[in-house]
Image 1 (cartoon, rainbow, N blue to C red):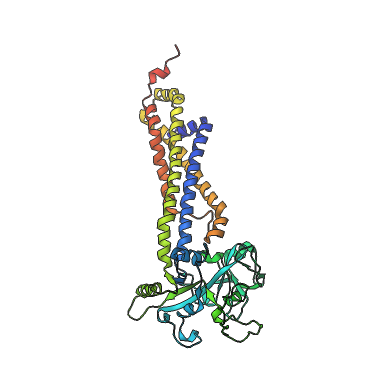
Image 2: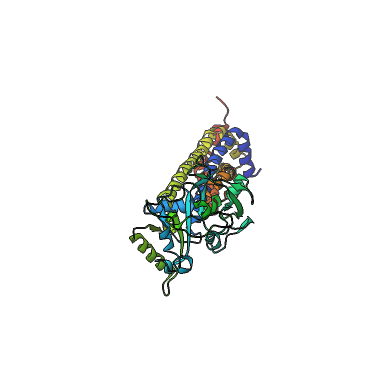
Length: 440
Protein backbone atom coordinates (compact mmCIF):
# COMPACT_ATOMS: atom_id res chain seq x y z
CA UNK A 1 0.00 0.00 0.00
CA UNK A 2 1.31 3.47 -0.86
CA UNK A 3 1.94 6.15 1.76
CA UNK A 4 -1.03 8.07 0.37
CA UNK A 5 -3.24 5.01 0.78
CA UNK A 6 -2.09 4.48 4.36
CA UNK A 7 -2.82 8.14 5.20
CA UNK A 8 -6.26 7.90 3.61
CA UNK A 9 -6.98 4.70 5.55
CA UNK A 10 -6.04 6.46 8.80
CA UNK A 11 -8.49 9.27 8.00
CA UNK A 12 -11.30 6.81 7.27
CA UNK A 13 -10.63 4.90 10.47
CA UNK A 14 -11.11 8.11 12.45
CA UNK A 15 -13.85 9.43 10.18
CA UNK A 16 -15.77 11.42 12.82
CA UNK A 17 -12.69 13.11 14.27
CA UNK A 18 -11.19 13.76 10.85
CA UNK A 19 -14.52 15.06 9.53
CA UNK A 20 -14.96 17.50 12.41
CA UNK A 21 -11.39 18.74 12.00
CA UNK A 22 -11.86 19.30 8.27
CA UNK A 23 -15.22 20.99 8.93
CA UNK A 24 -13.74 23.47 11.39
CA UNK A 25 -11.04 24.29 8.85
CA UNK A 26 -13.62 24.62 6.07
CA UNK A 27 -15.68 27.09 8.12
CA UNK A 28 -12.59 29.19 8.78
CA UNK A 29 -11.63 29.18 5.11
CA UNK A 30 -15.21 30.06 4.12
CA UNK A 31 -15.08 33.12 6.36
CA UNK A 32 -11.72 34.16 4.92
CA UNK A 33 -12.93 33.75 1.33
CA UNK A 34 -16.19 35.57 2.02
CA UNK A 35 -14.27 38.41 3.71
CA UNK A 36 -11.75 38.71 0.86
CA UNK A 37 -14.40 38.67 -1.86
CA UNK A 38 -16.78 40.98 -0.02
CA UNK A 39 -13.93 43.40 0.70
CA UNK A 40 -13.05 43.50 -2.97
CA UNK A 41 -16.70 44.08 -3.84
CA UNK A 42 -16.94 46.94 -1.33
CA UNK A 43 -13.84 48.54 -2.80
CA UNK A 44 -15.34 48.18 -6.26
CA UNK A 45 -18.56 49.77 -5.02
CA UNK A 46 -16.72 52.88 -3.88
CA UNK A 47 -14.23 52.99 -6.71
CA UNK A 48 -17.06 52.66 -9.26
CA UNK A 49 -18.18 56.13 -8.25
CA UNK A 50 -14.75 57.66 -8.79
CA UNK A 51 -15.36 58.06 -12.51
CA UNK A 52 -18.81 58.60 -13.95
CA UNK A 53 -18.04 61.06 -16.70
CA UNK A 54 -17.46 63.96 -14.30
CA UNK A 55 -14.56 64.89 -12.05
CA UNK A 56 -16.05 67.50 -9.73
CA UNK A 57 -19.21 68.02 -7.70
CA UNK A 58 -20.46 71.45 -6.64
CA UNK A 59 -22.91 71.78 -3.77
CA UNK A 60 -23.74 73.77 -0.67
CA UNK A 61 -21.09 74.60 1.91
CA UNK A 62 -20.50 71.76 4.37
CA UNK A 63 -18.85 68.36 4.40
CA UNK A 64 -17.35 67.46 1.00
CA UNK A 65 -17.56 63.76 1.89
CA UNK A 66 -21.28 64.07 2.60
CA UNK A 67 -21.70 65.86 -0.73
CA UNK A 68 -19.98 62.98 -2.55
CA UNK A 69 -21.83 60.24 -0.66
CA UNK A 70 -25.18 61.85 -1.41
CA UNK A 71 -24.55 62.85 -5.02
CA UNK A 72 -22.57 59.81 -6.19
CA UNK A 73 -23.75 56.93 -3.99
CA UNK A 74 -27.27 58.14 -3.11
CA UNK A 75 -26.65 57.67 0.61
CA UNK A 76 -26.68 60.20 3.43
CA UNK A 77 -28.78 63.35 3.10
CA UNK A 78 -28.22 66.50 1.05
CA UNK A 79 -26.42 69.28 2.89
CA UNK A 80 -28.55 72.13 1.55
CA UNK A 81 -29.51 73.45 -1.87
CA UNK A 82 -27.71 75.98 -4.03
CA UNK A 83 -29.40 78.63 -6.12
CA UNK A 84 -30.30 78.31 -9.78
CA UNK A 85 -28.36 81.51 -10.42
CA UNK A 86 -25.18 79.87 -9.10
CA UNK A 87 -25.77 76.85 -11.35
CA UNK A 88 -26.03 79.18 -14.35
CA UNK A 89 -22.54 80.51 -13.62
CA UNK A 90 -21.23 77.26 -15.14
CA UNK A 91 -23.22 77.59 -18.37
CA UNK A 92 -22.12 79.11 -21.66
CA UNK A 93 -23.91 82.03 -23.26
CA UNK A 94 -25.94 79.71 -25.52
CA UNK A 95 -27.50 78.00 -22.50
CA UNK A 96 -28.29 81.18 -20.55
CA UNK A 97 -31.31 83.43 -21.09
CA UNK A 98 -29.15 86.58 -20.93
CA UNK A 99 -26.75 85.33 -23.63
CA UNK A 100 -23.66 85.95 -21.45
CA UNK A 101 -21.10 83.35 -20.44
CA UNK A 102 -21.23 82.37 -16.78
CA UNK A 103 -18.37 83.15 -14.43
CA UNK A 104 -17.03 79.56 -14.60
CA UNK A 105 -18.14 78.69 -18.14
CA UNK A 106 -14.61 78.75 -19.58
CA UNK A 107 -13.51 76.03 -17.13
CA UNK A 108 -16.59 73.87 -17.64
CA UNK A 109 -17.17 71.32 -20.37
CA UNK A 110 -20.40 69.85 -19.00
CA UNK A 111 -22.54 70.93 -16.05
CA UNK A 112 -25.44 68.68 -15.07
CA UNK A 113 -27.74 69.72 -12.21
CA UNK A 114 -29.36 67.19 -9.88
CA UNK A 115 -32.22 67.64 -7.43
CA UNK A 116 -32.83 65.17 -4.62
CA UNK A 117 -35.25 64.67 -1.77
CA UNK A 118 -37.87 62.24 -3.10
CA UNK A 119 -38.10 58.44 -2.93
CA UNK A 120 -39.85 55.63 -4.72
CA UNK A 121 -40.21 52.36 -2.81
CA UNK A 122 -36.91 52.78 -1.02
CA UNK A 123 -34.96 54.08 -4.03
CA UNK A 124 -33.65 57.63 -4.38
CA UNK A 125 -35.33 59.81 -6.97
CA UNK A 126 -32.97 62.17 -8.82
CA UNK A 127 -34.31 65.12 -10.78
CA UNK A 128 -32.00 66.07 -13.65
CA UNK A 129 -32.03 66.94 -17.35
CA UNK A 130 -31.37 64.96 -20.51
CA UNK A 131 -27.67 65.89 -20.44
CA UNK A 132 -27.12 63.41 -17.60
CA UNK A 133 -27.32 60.44 -19.97
CA UNK A 134 -26.65 62.27 -23.24
CA UNK A 135 -23.40 64.07 -22.33
CA UNK A 136 -21.95 62.27 -19.33
CA UNK A 137 -20.46 58.79 -19.70
CA UNK A 138 -20.13 55.70 -17.56
CA UNK A 139 -16.62 56.78 -16.57
CA UNK A 140 -14.77 54.56 -19.02
CA UNK A 141 -15.59 56.76 -21.99
CA UNK A 142 -18.53 54.62 -23.09
CA UNK A 143 -21.96 56.24 -23.44
CA UNK A 144 -24.89 55.01 -21.40
CA UNK A 145 -26.91 52.21 -22.93
CA UNK A 146 -30.54 51.28 -22.47
CA UNK A 147 -31.94 47.77 -22.34
CA UNK A 148 -35.37 49.19 -23.15
CA UNK A 149 -36.63 52.57 -24.31
CA UNK A 150 -34.37 55.64 -24.34
CA UNK A 151 -33.45 58.74 -22.37
CA UNK A 152 -36.16 61.28 -21.64
CA UNK A 153 -36.07 64.60 -23.46
CA UNK A 154 -36.05 67.99 -21.77
CA UNK A 155 -39.55 68.81 -23.04
CA UNK A 156 -40.94 65.51 -21.70
CA UNK A 157 -41.69 66.94 -18.26
CA UNK A 158 -42.89 63.68 -16.72
CA UNK A 159 -40.49 61.18 -18.28
CA UNK A 160 -38.32 58.96 -16.14
CA UNK A 161 -35.41 56.52 -16.47
CA UNK A 162 -34.87 53.59 -14.11
CA UNK A 163 -31.57 52.08 -13.08
CA UNK A 164 -31.14 48.39 -13.90
CA UNK A 165 -31.40 47.22 -10.27
CA UNK A 166 -34.55 49.29 -9.67
CA UNK A 167 -36.31 47.95 -12.75
CA UNK A 168 -35.39 44.37 -11.86
CA UNK A 169 -36.40 44.76 -8.22
CA UNK A 170 -39.72 46.49 -8.83
CA UNK A 171 -40.62 44.75 -12.08
CA UNK A 172 -41.34 48.00 -13.93
CA UNK A 173 -41.20 48.28 -17.71
CA UNK A 174 -41.20 51.03 -20.30
CA UNK A 175 -44.65 52.61 -20.36
CA UNK A 176 -45.39 51.95 -16.67
CA UNK A 177 -46.13 54.84 -14.31
CA UNK A 178 -44.64 55.50 -10.89
CA UNK A 179 -45.39 58.16 -8.30
CA UNK A 180 -42.50 59.34 -6.07
CA UNK A 181 -43.11 60.35 -2.46
CA UNK A 182 -41.88 63.54 -0.85
CA UNK A 183 -38.98 63.27 1.60
CA UNK A 184 -39.53 59.61 2.55
CA UNK A 185 -41.35 56.48 1.46
CA UNK A 186 -44.32 57.43 3.64
CA UNK A 187 -44.36 61.07 2.49
CA UNK A 188 -46.93 62.84 0.34
CA UNK A 189 -47.44 61.15 -3.02
CA UNK A 190 -46.46 63.25 -6.03
CA UNK A 191 -47.80 63.26 -9.57
CA UNK A 192 -46.89 60.14 -11.58
CA UNK A 193 -44.00 59.93 -14.02
CA UNK A 194 -43.83 57.56 -16.97
CA UNK A 195 -40.95 55.13 -17.53
CA UNK A 196 -39.43 55.94 -20.93
CA UNK A 197 -36.12 54.09 -20.54
CA UNK A 198 -34.34 51.44 -18.49
CA UNK A 199 -30.56 51.70 -18.16
CA UNK A 200 -28.30 48.80 -18.97
CA UNK A 201 -26.43 47.60 -15.90
CA UNK A 202 -23.42 49.78 -15.13
CA UNK A 203 -22.26 48.16 -11.87
CA UNK A 204 -22.29 51.62 -10.32
CA UNK A 205 -24.65 53.36 -7.87
CA UNK A 206 -26.66 54.54 -10.89
CA UNK A 207 -28.22 51.09 -11.04
CA UNK A 208 -30.07 51.96 -7.81
CA UNK A 209 -31.38 55.33 -8.98
CA UNK A 210 -34.70 56.60 -10.30
CA UNK A 211 -34.10 59.54 -12.65
CA UNK A 212 -36.83 61.98 -13.61
CA UNK A 213 -37.00 65.15 -15.66
CA UNK A 214 -36.21 68.00 -13.30
CA UNK A 215 -38.92 70.15 -14.96
CA UNK A 216 -41.55 67.73 -13.69
CA UNK A 217 -39.67 67.42 -10.40
CA UNK A 218 -39.95 71.18 -9.86
CA UNK A 219 -43.72 71.14 -10.40
CA UNK A 220 -44.35 68.80 -7.45
CA UNK A 221 -45.78 70.15 -4.21
CA UNK A 222 -43.09 71.43 -1.87
CA UNK A 223 -40.36 71.69 -4.52
CA UNK A 224 -40.68 75.37 -5.40
CA UNK A 225 -38.56 77.81 -3.44
CA UNK A 226 -40.76 80.34 -1.58
CA UNK A 227 -40.32 83.89 -2.83
CA UNK A 228 -39.65 86.83 -0.49
CA UNK A 229 -42.52 89.23 0.04
CA UNK A 230 -42.92 91.54 -2.90
CA UNK A 231 -40.84 89.48 -5.37
CA UNK A 232 -42.73 88.26 -8.41
CA UNK A 233 -42.04 84.95 -10.20
CA UNK A 234 -39.83 85.26 -13.25
CA UNK A 235 -41.43 83.54 -16.24
CA UNK A 236 -39.00 81.29 -18.10
CA UNK A 237 -41.02 79.87 -20.99
CA UNK A 238 -44.55 79.68 -22.35
CA UNK A 239 -46.76 76.73 -21.37
CA UNK A 240 -45.88 73.42 -23.01
CA UNK A 241 -48.20 71.56 -25.36
CA UNK A 242 -49.19 69.45 -22.38
CA UNK A 243 -50.38 72.57 -20.60
CA UNK A 244 -47.61 72.51 -17.96
CA UNK A 245 -45.89 75.79 -17.18
CA UNK A 246 -42.16 75.54 -16.23
CA UNK A 247 -41.23 76.73 -12.77
CA UNK A 248 -39.72 80.27 -12.77
CA UNK A 249 -35.96 80.48 -12.35
CA UNK A 250 -36.12 82.43 -9.10
CA UNK A 251 -38.11 79.61 -7.51
CA UNK A 252 -35.60 76.90 -8.47
CA UNK A 253 -32.79 75.35 -6.47
CA UNK A 254 -30.50 72.40 -7.18
CA UNK A 255 -28.94 69.93 -4.77
CA UNK A 256 -25.63 69.63 -6.62
CA UNK A 257 -23.93 70.13 -9.98
CA UNK A 258 -21.95 67.35 -11.64
CA UNK A 259 -19.07 68.95 -13.51
CA UNK A 260 -16.82 67.74 -16.26
CA UNK A 261 -14.11 70.39 -16.31
CA UNK A 262 -12.55 71.70 -19.49
CA UNK A 263 -8.85 71.95 -20.30
CA UNK A 264 -7.75 75.54 -20.73
CA UNK A 265 -5.26 76.18 -23.55
CA UNK A 266 -1.76 75.16 -22.49
CA UNK A 267 -2.86 73.75 -19.15
CA UNK A 268 -3.53 70.12 -18.13
CA UNK A 269 -7.10 69.23 -17.12
CA UNK A 270 -6.02 68.46 -13.54
CA UNK A 271 -4.60 71.96 -13.08
CA UNK A 272 -7.77 73.50 -14.49
CA UNK A 273 -9.87 71.47 -12.05
CA UNK A 274 -7.74 72.52 -9.07
CA UNK A 275 -7.96 76.16 -10.06
CA UNK A 276 -11.73 75.97 -10.49
CA UNK A 277 -12.11 74.19 -7.16
CA UNK A 278 -10.10 76.89 -5.37
CA UNK A 279 -12.13 79.68 -6.98
CA UNK A 280 -15.45 78.07 -5.98
CA UNK A 281 -14.40 77.26 -2.43
CA UNK A 282 -13.17 80.80 -1.84
CA UNK A 283 -16.62 82.14 -2.72
CA UNK A 284 -19.74 82.12 -0.57
CA UNK A 285 -22.16 80.40 -2.93
CA UNK A 286 -21.02 76.79 -2.59
CA UNK A 287 -18.18 74.31 -2.40
CA UNK A 288 -16.45 72.04 -4.89
CA UNK A 289 -15.43 68.47 -4.07
CA UNK A 290 -13.28 66.05 -6.06
CA UNK A 291 -15.00 62.62 -5.88
CA UNK A 292 -11.78 60.63 -6.42
CA UNK A 293 -9.99 62.36 -3.54
CA UNK A 294 -12.92 61.98 -1.16
CA UNK A 295 -13.42 58.32 -2.09
CA UNK A 296 -9.76 57.52 -1.52
CA UNK A 297 -9.87 59.23 1.85
CA UNK A 298 -12.96 57.26 2.80
CA UNK A 299 -11.33 53.99 1.75
CA UNK A 300 -8.13 54.75 3.64
CA UNK A 301 -9.83 55.92 6.83
CA UNK A 302 -12.73 53.49 7.17
CA UNK A 303 -13.14 50.73 4.59
CA UNK A 304 -9.63 49.26 4.44
CA UNK A 305 -9.04 49.24 8.24
CA UNK A 306 -12.39 47.50 8.71
CA UNK A 307 -11.52 45.02 5.98
CA UNK A 308 -8.17 44.28 7.66
CA UNK A 309 -9.88 43.83 11.02
CA UNK A 310 -12.36 41.33 9.59
CA UNK A 311 -9.55 39.53 7.80
CA UNK A 312 -7.57 39.32 11.04
CA UNK A 313 -10.54 37.80 12.86
CA UNK A 314 -11.11 35.22 10.15
CA UNK A 315 -7.37 34.43 10.00
CA UNK A 316 -7.53 33.70 13.72
CA UNK A 317 -10.40 31.32 13.01
CA UNK A 318 -8.22 29.48 10.48
CA UNK A 319 -5.38 29.39 13.00
CA UNK A 320 -7.69 27.86 15.59
CA UNK A 321 -8.72 25.30 12.98
CA UNK A 322 -5.05 24.47 12.38
CA UNK A 323 -4.62 23.99 16.12
CA UNK A 324 -7.60 21.65 15.85
CA UNK A 325 -5.58 19.56 13.38
CA UNK A 326 -2.72 19.48 15.89
CA UNK A 327 -4.98 18.46 18.77
CA UNK A 328 -6.74 15.84 16.65
CA UNK A 329 -3.53 14.24 15.48
CA UNK A 330 -1.83 14.41 18.88
CA UNK A 331 -4.93 12.84 20.43
CA UNK A 332 -4.79 9.99 17.96
CA UNK A 333 -1.02 9.50 18.22
CA UNK A 334 -1.38 6.99 21.04
CA UNK A 335 -4.05 5.13 19.06
CA UNK A 336 -1.73 4.76 16.08
CA UNK A 337 1.45 3.99 18.07
CA UNK A 338 0.91 0.23 17.84
CA UNK A 339 0.12 0.52 14.11
CA UNK A 340 3.31 2.51 13.63
CA UNK A 341 5.30 -0.13 15.51
CA UNK A 342 3.86 -2.87 13.30
CA UNK A 343 4.73 -0.82 10.18
CA UNK A 344 8.29 -0.44 11.44
CA UNK A 345 8.53 -4.17 12.22
CA UNK A 346 7.37 -4.95 8.69
CA UNK A 347 10.22 -2.89 7.27
CA UNK A 348 8.82 0.65 7.01
CA UNK A 349 11.44 3.34 7.47
CA UNK A 350 11.12 6.17 9.97
CA UNK A 351 10.90 8.58 7.07
CA UNK A 352 7.88 6.65 5.73
CA UNK A 353 6.12 6.98 9.09
CA UNK A 354 6.91 10.71 9.21
CA UNK A 355 5.66 11.20 5.66
CA UNK A 356 2.42 9.30 6.34
CA UNK A 357 1.46 11.59 9.21
CA UNK A 358 2.29 14.72 7.21
CA UNK A 359 0.33 13.47 4.19
CA UNK A 360 -2.67 12.86 6.44
CA UNK A 361 -2.48 16.47 7.68
CA UNK A 362 -2.14 17.79 4.12
CA UNK A 363 -5.19 15.77 2.99
CA UNK A 364 -7.25 17.25 5.83
CA UNK A 365 -6.02 20.76 4.97
CA UNK A 366 -6.65 20.44 1.23
CA UNK A 367 -10.04 18.79 1.72
CA UNK A 368 -11.16 21.35 4.30
CA UNK A 369 -9.67 24.21 2.25
CA UNK A 370 -11.46 23.26 -0.96
CA UNK A 371 -14.74 22.71 0.87
CA UNK A 372 -14.31 26.07 2.60
CA UNK A 373 -13.49 27.81 -0.67
CA UNK A 374 -16.69 26.47 -2.24
CA UNK A 375 -18.71 27.32 0.87
CA UNK A 376 -17.30 30.86 0.93
CA UNK A 377 -18.35 31.50 -2.67
CA UNK A 378 -21.78 30.02 -2.01
CA UNK A 379 -22.09 32.42 0.94
CA UNK A 380 -21.20 35.39 -1.26
CA UNK A 381 -23.68 34.14 -3.85
CA UNK A 382 -26.40 33.90 -1.19
CA UNK A 383 -25.95 37.53 -0.12
CA UNK A 384 -25.22 38.67 -3.69
CA UNK A 385 -28.72 40.03 -4.39
CA UNK A 386 -28.57 42.12 -1.21
CA UNK A 387 -25.12 43.49 -2.15
CA UNK A 388 -26.29 44.27 -5.68
CA UNK A 389 -29.38 46.10 -4.43
CA UNK A 390 -27.60 48.14 -1.75
CA UNK A 391 -24.14 48.65 -3.21
CA UNK A 392 -24.92 48.80 -6.91
CA UNK A 393 -22.26 46.24 -7.91
CA UNK A 394 -22.72 42.70 -9.10
CA UNK A 395 -21.95 40.01 -6.52
CA UNK A 396 -22.36 36.34 -7.31
CA UNK A 397 -20.89 32.90 -6.71
CA UNK A 398 -18.30 33.71 -9.36
CA UNK A 399 -17.12 36.94 -7.70
CA UNK A 400 -13.52 36.45 -6.63
CA UNK A 401 -10.35 37.93 -5.22
CA UNK A 402 -8.03 35.86 -7.47
CA UNK A 403 -4.60 36.63 -6.04
CA UNK A 404 -5.54 36.26 -2.37
CA UNK A 405 -7.55 33.10 -3.02
CA UNK A 406 -4.72 31.56 -5.03
CA UNK A 407 -2.42 31.92 -2.02
CA UNK A 408 -4.95 30.55 0.45
CA UNK A 409 -4.65 26.77 -0.16
CA UNK A 410 -0.80 26.75 -0.22
CA UNK A 411 -0.90 28.71 3.03
CA UNK A 412 -3.22 26.10 4.53
CA UNK A 413 -0.92 23.27 3.43
CA UNK A 414 2.06 24.93 5.10
CA UNK A 415 -0.03 25.60 8.20
CA UNK A 416 -1.16 21.96 8.33
CA UNK A 417 2.37 20.66 7.93
CA UNK A 418 3.57 22.88 10.79
CA UNK A 419 0.65 21.74 12.96
CA UNK A 420 1.38 18.08 12.18
CA UNK A 421 5.11 18.24 12.89
CA UNK A 422 4.74 17.41 16.60
CA UNK A 423 2.63 14.25 16.14
CA UNK A 424 4.73 13.31 13.09
CA UNK A 425 7.94 13.52 15.13
CA UNK A 426 6.25 11.53 17.90
CA UNK A 427 5.38 8.83 15.37
CA UNK A 428 8.89 9.01 13.97
CA UNK A 429 10.35 8.30 17.41
CA UNK A 430 7.95 5.47 18.32
CA UNK A 431 9.65 2.72 20.38
CA UNK A 432 8.98 -0.45 18.37
CA UNK A 433 9.97 -2.90 21.12
CA UNK A 434 7.73 -1.21 23.70
CA UNK A 435 4.57 -1.39 21.60
CA UNK A 436 5.15 -4.90 20.21
CA UNK A 437 5.74 -6.63 23.53
CA UNK A 438 2.72 -8.32 24.98
CA UNK A 439 0.82 -7.20 28.06
CA UNK A 440 2.34 -7.93 31.45
